[in-house]
Image 1: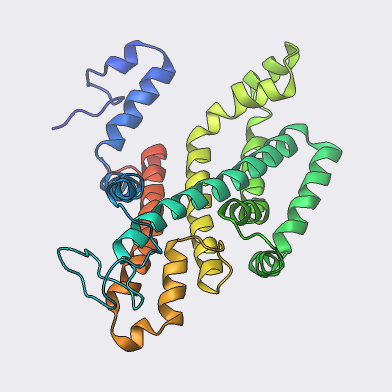
Image 2 (image 1 turned 45 degrees about the vertical axis):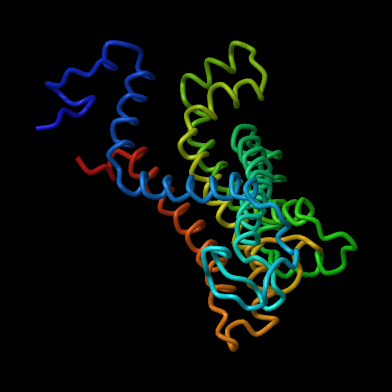
Length: 302
């Protein structure tokens, strides 16, 4: 029978050290044996590698007309060409890079705002908690997609960074409420009271006492925010509100629909971007489920 770290009768080197080292050893043990975590992480890393490395081996731009029109996949054009002679593979790899960047920026902005509001509200309590909770509820009830459509539609500049900024500014409330709830349960612990009595500042207590004990929860929150940002960006791109002159998986779908790729049978134009978005977001959620099983002892499969 395979020995499990932290169980009676096993020789776990982590048990002889500090409690943190023991927990780390146990977490790594289960992480290496969780199929959901391994599959999700492998797909994400594969897509990330394609997005980062792929463009380096392409000597033409994604929107450049470089070949015959409506050519199916071949050895020369891996994913065929559009009805204008654009290389679909070049658009795909550049689109993956843009999608990852949008997810990272949009999810990162939402994560920073949400965790900051949640930590401060949960730790401070009182009037500060009431004000921040009211602000969170106001933003939460706003129809986020409608606000984004109106805001982006009237902007003169539709850059990727601007799009990610608006996504982040409208996606943080649920993360703030979740972090606030966790912080409320930790703020009354003895080690937090001891840190408070020692005169440590609020941000020092939050970053050194509260956040480390919620690290697994924070990682999973960022993954969910990343996936949400990717889906929102794809939706905006699909309805024609994406970055002007840019390329993304959502813009590829929008262009394919606009020029009747489905009716013309150009399946290689719309299937790759759709599959890319589905694989990326799906693998992120599979990764999140795997992390939940690793970090939560009740969900672990021995």
